[in-house]
Amino acid sequence: MTLTSASGAHILGLGAVTGYGWGADALWTGLLSGKPAADLYEGYGGGGSAWLAMVPPGGDPQDGISRSARAMRAAAREAIADAVARGWTPGRRVGLLHAVVVPEVEEWRRFYLNDKSNRRVRDYLGMMPSTPVSLIMREFDFHGPAMNVSAMCASGNAALITAKMWLDADMVDDVLFIATDLSLTPEHVEHFVKLGVAVVDVEPLDGCRPFQEGSRGFPGGEASISFVLSKRAGASYTSMLGGAMSHDAFHLTSVDPARTHVDACVRDALSAARVESGDIRYINAHGPGTAQCDAAEAGVLDDIFGGRPQIYSVKPLAGHCQGAAAAVEIAAAALGYEHGVIPAPPTVAPGHPRLLDGATPMDAGLTLKTSLGMGGHNSAVVLAPSIAA
Image (cartoon, rainbow, N blue to C red; front, top):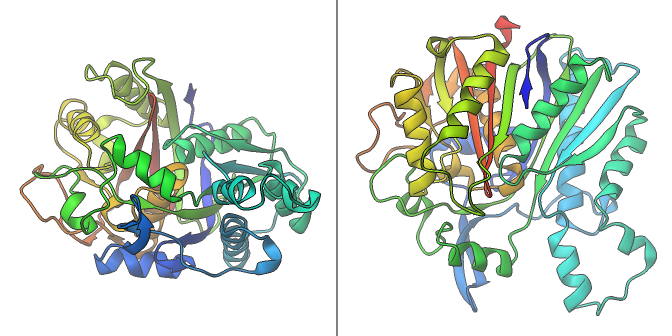
């Protein structure tokens, strides 16, 4: 699937709930600090402990009984309030896209283990993936299309691409985008460790070193991120010029080492955005710190872009937020354009020569955001500063 740049999808508002806390300011301050959001949590790995970037307690209890519902609605409200403060007026048709992978996993866990499959109907309905979407639409009186999008770790890119498709097709005037993943139960963490990709036994910068020697994988993370997107540029953070998605159809967990479809997806994204490889200044990478993903993205940088762009990944800082991962990383790029700084983590070992080391002043230029979802989901979007809208 390739998305053309018939018009820009402009991010006019931003909301965030992450391991750094509740609010976009907490995310930005945390990323700029160069210190991971992860903390040590007990009760994981058979009663042990794990370094995880979990969302801390907070939110409005009236938004639901789960952390997930509270985080989703808080992020959405912040994005809408931010957009309005920057001059946005909702159009007649506001759609909603919610990027998710395993929604309400904590509540399903409690439903089976604690409640023995017995709950009030109202509380049971709260676990349905349609419920948080419906509640947001009702709260803000939005009446455009509303749906969930899932493409594993590439879900954020997938929903952003879908949002631009809606805007380009004139199905909507504006889109409320939300990506939510608060799924760090002991069972989920344990199985990602067993897969050999999650590293929770050491502090994140010791274990997660994307594009550097000694990297073992990623720390688990949680987040809910929200954007307001519109065809009207306004005071935007960034504009999405185009994007593309494909599938390797190769393996349940592994990236095809030939990179055939990864490379084609990146080239299709450039074509859709109507830009050349030489126009890309930065690559905001999926960068989970696993050997296969780092090799694939470094290969893209070296072979398609001739080693010109600089590359970074914020996963050592924010953690791998699964279904919300791409959204957290797009938020980092959007805030980077707003403040003129790329919030890259510090390097801790020898690595790729184009890898950024710590917070870096941002030059004018385009950003390619890649995201590779487990199972073969490839995605790439091209982001521009608001002045390029």
